Image 1 (spheres, rainbow, N blue to C red):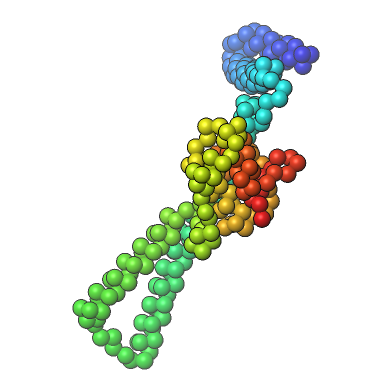
Image 2 (cartoon, rainbow, N blue to C red):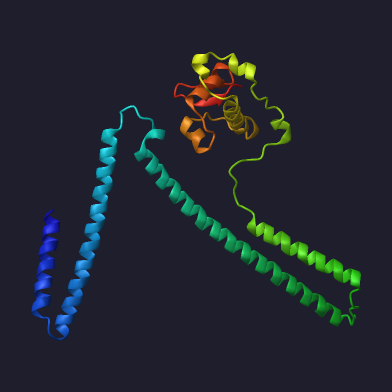
Amino acid sequence: MSKLCGFNGLLGAVIVKAERASAGDVGKDAIRYRDSIISTYVFQKAESDLDYIQHRLEFEIMKSLPDNLSAEENPVTLLEELSVVKSRYKTLCMQLEKVSLEQKESMNGIRAALENTMKMVQTLQQHADLQRSPLSEEEQTAAQQLTCQTVKEMELLAEEPFCSGSVVPSSVEESKFKPLTEEMLMSVPRSIRSSVKLADVNNLYRELFNHFIVNKNSAALSVSQMNKMNMKATDSRIRILKELAIVELDRQGNVKLVA
């Protein structure tokens, strides 16, 4: 507060001096300096107000939420995670732009190497007093097809995504997956299965199977980690799989397929 008062005093002094020296070049310089000071003050005050509003909103939200609220239902935590995701997305975009630039440079290098090779061949032919016979129609057609195919492959390589959301499982390991049947679901006590649909349970089971068996991951997953991977895990679906001895839970509630 003392700093703000001091700043306001300095601002007032600058304004008074500018008004007294309003005539001549000195007055104009003082007015410009005054305007710059005012602009800086306005922006700093706006930033301070925004910070206060943000902290005030977070405080009000936390005060109105129950104490036992999970991280997935806490809006403040979700906003923090969203900020982290946006930062990672920005980093990935920068990396993607860098890779795209390197690809273009590689293609230019390949073209330059081909041109140099053609020049070397022509030079060798001239030194050896060889006359190059014109290409036949079949050879010209084959050369054009080869050129088009090479260009298409390079374009596809440039447009190919650099990362994918999931790993394609092998057909052998995928064949080991056996979905749950309606009879298996009905064998679970009604208090556990409630109104959960068989398709939803099988979708979660398949995602866990791909993660642990196909992709050979061994670390147990928390509910938040599974939802970040779009597995759509819920307590009721996990309890059904646990009741059927398909998954097991550790002391922290993390999920892992039964070996």
